[in-house]
Length: 350
Image (cartoon, rainbow, N blue to C red; front, side, top):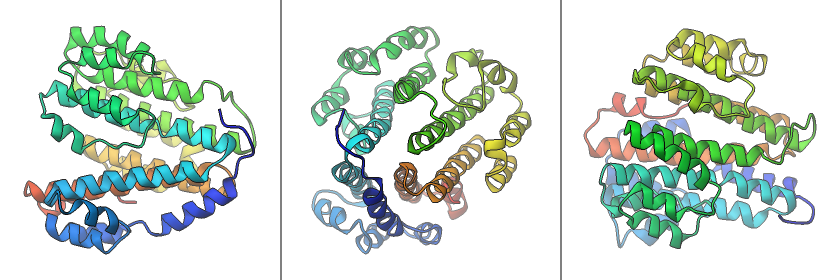
């Protein structure tokens, strides 16, 4: 735990400047009409210039784009930690463990689908707490059981060990992926309590929103999967929108799920545009993108209302993630020959 005073005003001023340099929705629409080499050239004219130039001698096409995106993302989050002090530093470190979750899910899916380790590495974002040596060892193991063994002593080990039994019975990755999410969020909330005011309250409010939207996503995924998995087993504690009985009741009823979000004062009063997009979504991917957009909108709202809290930092992290995922989706879509409409459906655009 870091000691000393937090410095949110300084960090948030730096974050606002970085946020201004991010791509706009209009930029994404331009990129959709480009091939991978044109996308790389476009990125060279933006703040990705250094990564494209450094990696351009070793990679090309979509590989160059993906490695540049991931390196740039890690650089931004390393900078965040370098600028931050005191409790703010601790909060950001713990929140950036979400990239450990991303990497572990990517590695587990890669092992499950027998993907080449080099292809797994392309998708990794080295911005979490797990060091490069551990990640490299995880990429090279042969089984999911080996992954869990290597994670002994981390915040993920206990939840994964329990979930592994269910994975062996069902053959589905859902229990393992959900175990990673649960370990992450439960650890984040463990020592926060429920402060009613001040910067800590805004941090908790943001985390509650992430958990709520994760539970909503899980409910719909379970409904669409047609499996007989128990929804309560995938419930993540800590949000304000659902309890276990809500999740059981709403699985399988899309309209009721959206109504449930809309009826909640915290979200319904603030996210009318996002809720309209949820109602209009006619596929799981559109629903998930609408949820992502709603969370971004909510984070932006918190950061404008509470500019001296951690909210602007969290809003920046989400915004940067969206940028990287959108560019990646465009490059991959162009590589496999999707048309412009199909690619646009893969993007999170506000």
